[in-house]
Amino acid sequence: MKHWTEGFDDDDADEPLVRPYTITGGRTAPERDDLTLITLVTAISTVSSETGHGLRRMQPEHRTILALCKRPLAVAEIASALNLPVSVTKILIGDLIESDQVRARPPLAFAQAGGFPGMTILEAVRDGLRNL
Image 1 (cartoon, rainbow, N blue to C red):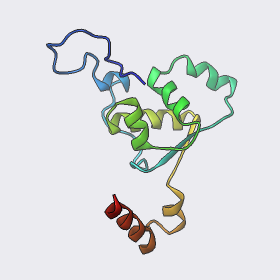
Image 2: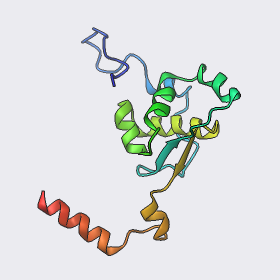
Image 3: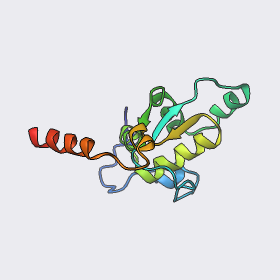
């Protein structure tokens, strides 16, 4: 996916032409505190006629999130694909959750284990990293 600033020839500018707060409608912090880097986001497949009208009023980044989340993706993966800061991505995901277009849930391993991974999982990750 192309970054939204690609194609601009102004090499003198150190900062992007459009600041992230314009994408979020001026909001600088997510309203939801339940979205972490590993929260899984999935698009809801059924789109009502009311939701369909709202699609036209969304930012392009909202539509990109919907397209990406046809399969579950972590918030960090979505932010990386959009090439946006995680805080901005969380605001956009929050918008989509509020409009019932996506669902967010913690990863199953954490949800089923009561919030913390087991030692066997951590040891397997450690061993896998050592083998790299």
